[in-house]
Image 1 (cartoon, one colour):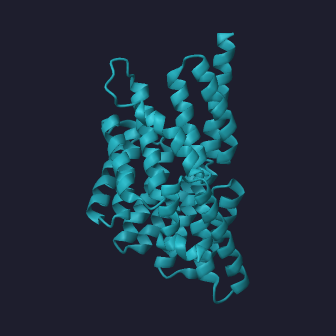
Image 2 (image 1 turned 180 degrees about the vertical axis):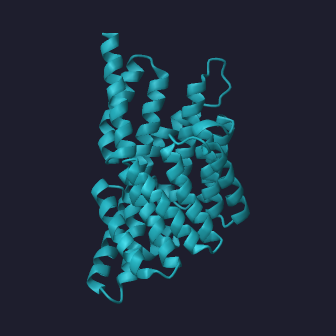
Length: 309
């Protein structure tokens, strides 16, 4: 019976991982909730933590940030305690969870809060391995949000050094491209940003990761706008919108649709109106899952408030 339970748990974790990184994120929610229940019943804390981290990824990718934080916070709290029985796997998963929590706060525009969680991930991971990479890259993105180009470039280079010689790290190398694009835009290098985002899209396509393709297209579209290539940006963002909506990735839908609404306002007002309405629905969907304090911060963000107005 134990072997049967272990086999079932492995299958649930595999299904959750596929949904998180290669399919519709919300398809992983129920398998991963079941995996947590089974792992707890079988007294398998590492498997429960792995399922919790993956569940947090799936929920946050679907825009269910409040639910994701509720799942991830215990995983973060269980790592880095210094307890004698703390395992390397527990520290790894705790660091990955902390970096994911940081990503959620960053998506909400809370860059200073995100920086604190990325610092935690960096400390727990000792700046090594996949979790160390996530922490360093997250700190680079935090610095972009805070307008600190020098810190962003330094952290970005640290993450790139960790990924050097690791071709199997497709997810990490795709995300490197995103942040390279962000740093390039911060430094007014729009064409470099277009190139970095395009390379990330190609790698994500090669890796069979549609959610990462959609996000890469968002970065590419933003960079094309900044480079004065509005026609190309419109085509890129239309593709991003269709893909994001097919995957149910709400956090990608609202910025893509908001940008399309702005780009199309003069030449295609009807499509512009539809895109703005879609952006508004996505913003409201995010708000509905947030606790009261985070919801207040979210809806008061200038870009979000403009969509809701």
